[in-house]
Image (cartoon, rainbow, N blue to C red; front, side, top):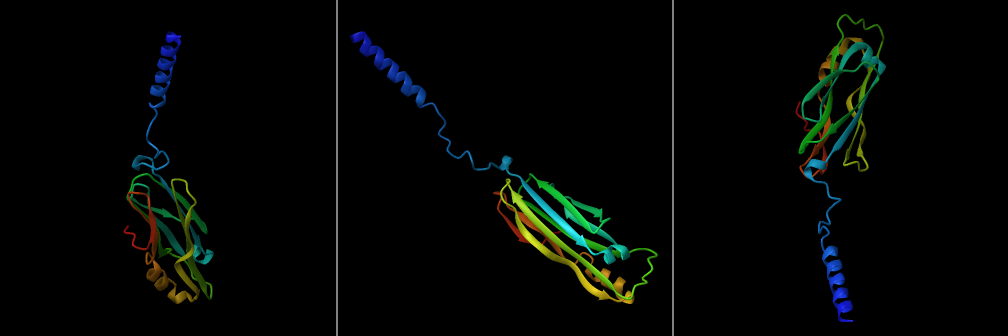
Length: 176
């Protein structure tokens, strides 16, 4: 009987020892700096008139913070920028330049470029804004088209700042 008792005590002690070897880290869901990520999605909507008379360049910050310039070739320019380094600032602006040799034959032009953007951090629900304005001039006469393009070129920038912890806020203070 004594052997059975001692054997039971040994088995119980072994079971308790193995049960206490688990991890005490209860913070498995919190992102670590190396596991944070963000996706910055944006669309620039350009009126056909604006595209017909000007070279539209979309300027944005990539995931490494470098400035990228791309020509818009259609009325909708869409891009996703993946960010893995924090803190970060991402953003977009548009530049407009009258096309060389363009003939302004219409009576009036609608020069419109709007912007939708959103940010998603660590795959969580995205948030952002729609119909922000890069340029909004309707009924522009041909003799002032070049002046309006120059005035609005690069005048507005929109984006997000993301701190080292992954918190973000909207900004218009984006340096390119």
